[in-house]
Length: 309
Picture 1 (cartoon, rainbow, N blue to C red):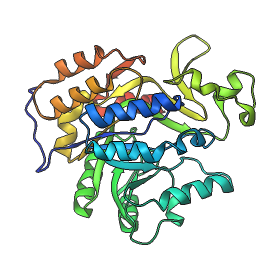
Picture 2: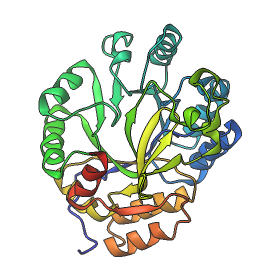
Picture 3: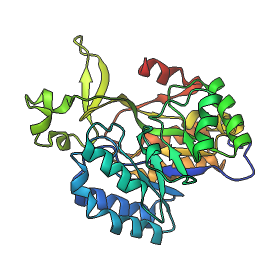
């Protein structure tokens, strides 16, 4: 495949997704300061998505992190929780939905009950947008960007990207990182350590990229991140960026992992600009000192569908 790409009128955006893992607050803030000053992305997501018990550790630092990112020229998007079950979590979502000066991304439909009429919002890959009807309904409610679920085949991505263009909605794909597969009311991390969810001692912090899970036969299978199930491998669409851009995808999301995310971002930026080809891009990702095994490029998205199923 040649490096040259068929591009849209506007170059695709690069997006740094929210940190999904339980990183110490200083590490989290340092990472986002690094992104603000040194990483070539257009937008950055912040906010706790996975577990509301983690949120208080970050709450006091969030305003300064947002200000630092905005000072670095990044658009900031604040994410809401993916699973809202109690009154405290509903209030947390309502408080985030009321923030001024930042974009909001929903990780389930709960925030729509509290967003003011006309308030714009983005939609995360945890929301099942599988068809044009769902996309149109969300657009009518104020969605300006939708990150499609990673298990969608290329044919569905093409259809939704075309419909998104008609509706004026950005179509985004999850382009790098462990894939978020499911959220549960149970905490797998706590159970592994013989603890209850309510007294978990935040043991998920011991695994900054998630805890790998094998089958009984010892084969690599999944990873767990507190109450979240994820793919074992770090997925990438670097080998199908040309097809995705041609289909009309407007933005590529990188999900933070430990390792050199600056190098990962630079690789995607160079591939999207046509400065390198697929082979060089994959080689650069393989050399990026990632702690998570890099899976094969999601050509035809069959690999990710198999993982998700």
